[in-house]
View 1 (cartoon, one colour):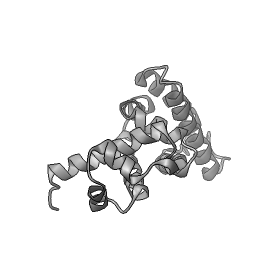
View 2: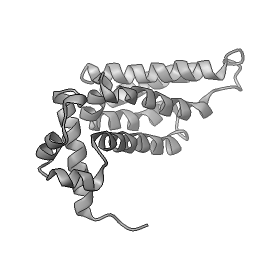
View 3: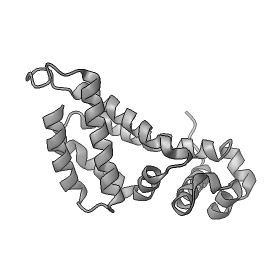
Length: 182
């Protein structure tokens, strides 16, 4: 696979940052390609070299974050809940503007919450404890929906309340709750 030119990566990062910054200020529907170009300090045509439109730009941004979270799933499942969740909460903290903007959005990107939920439910699927007997009479779909919805809800609460607890404290609390559930 060919390596991407650093200038291309820098331009794409600038465009992604611009759209998130603008979404923090106004609705996605009210953002124009010219707004994004001005904020990123590029020409309108430059955006079209990389993305079809603002929807494609946003979708690629969301996909990149979901991909990074999914990559964490691969090694996090080897750890206990408390240790596994610390990197996730650190990631949410590091990308606060993105997550706060996306989870607060009621416009076009409101599907982000559903995509995040589906991603976590997929990750939790292999974590359901069937050996101890605590989940014997419970349906897998209901367990996954419950745990996923609770997890996304607490992330949303934490971010909307400007992260009142450090990532380590959140990981410990949520890890304990997820261990009880799954």
